[in-house]
Every structure is written in structure tokens, then in C-alpha cells.
Image (tube, rainbow, N blue to C red):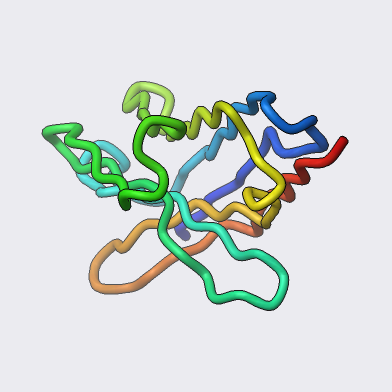
Length: 116
């Protein structure tokens, strides 16, 4: 079965960086488009970044361009999110996502808290 397991969240000070990881299994990872989403308390879940396959093209909403970078390692079946210049507004649960055979899959999420 499809499994997505996020890691790398935690507490970071404003201006700091974090790198999130998502380990994927149960599907042909190299064929799948992967995304990171986040959900802050009281807000809707929003897409943060997407990386296509097989081209590896990256797509970011304007609000995340320049600070967040998504990447993938097909050999390891992993997708990453490098987050720089973090702000308090970036506090949220971050989720790994893919759509495989018309079904959306989510990881359990990893908490990112930006606070001094």
C-alpha cells in the first residue's frame, strides 16, 4: 500500500532553516508527481511546492518562491523541502502528498513551529 512518512519538523527560530523529508513506498515513485502541503491552525490546507516526474520540474505558489525548495531522489524514493528564512507565519503541519492511480495520498504530517 502507498505510504508517505514525513520527518524533519521541529522548533526553529525566525530566520532559521529546516529540511523536511518524505519517505515514500508502495508505488512507482519515479513516475509520481509529489507535493508538499501545509495546514496552519484554523486555516485551510495549502500547497507549498510540487515536483513533477519524470522531468523534475518544480512549481511554487508565488508566496513560497525564493524561500522554499522542493527536490527529489528517485533512487531513495524520497522528496525533500528545504525551507529558509522561516517566519512565524510558516508555523504549520507540513504534509507530503501524491496522487497515484487517481487516489490522493497523504502522510501523517510533521509539525514545524517558528518561534523565538
